[in-house]
Image (cartoon, rainbow, N blue to C red; front, side, top):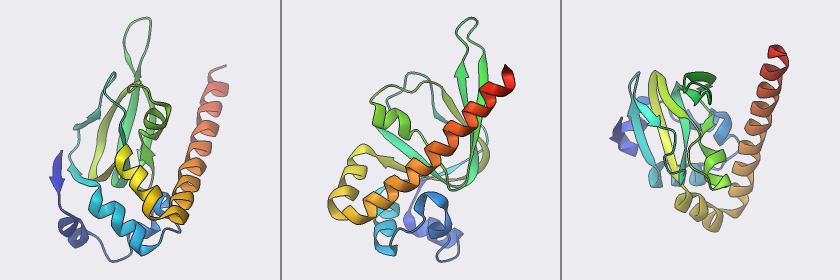
Length: 160
């Protein structure tokens, strides 16, 4: 993955593009700009590893475009089992960060694209500097997590 500047990202997408992503829905232009400028932006290629089993969970990613496949290691044989494909506008890694546990699987870029890394420190700064927008951001994250739980419930039901 290659770190890129906010200016490089800004050239890639039309104005207001990021505000239409579900994770950033209803955020003010100022607070979204804060996240994009203070976070770490990446250009990712197919096959790049976002994180692996056991890595630190002190940050999470918002997918701006492209997609990321998440795998877990099966206990009995260590085989990688694909669990979910994360797409533009979704986050990956928040559960580990907020749960204070190491990564519980591998995340690999499936379709090239751009990502925003939000560290736990930046997440805290957003809370301090934009408390109302922080609440909206948490609602967006919670909404996505509830969809993910429903998806996992359905996967489980389909297997049994």
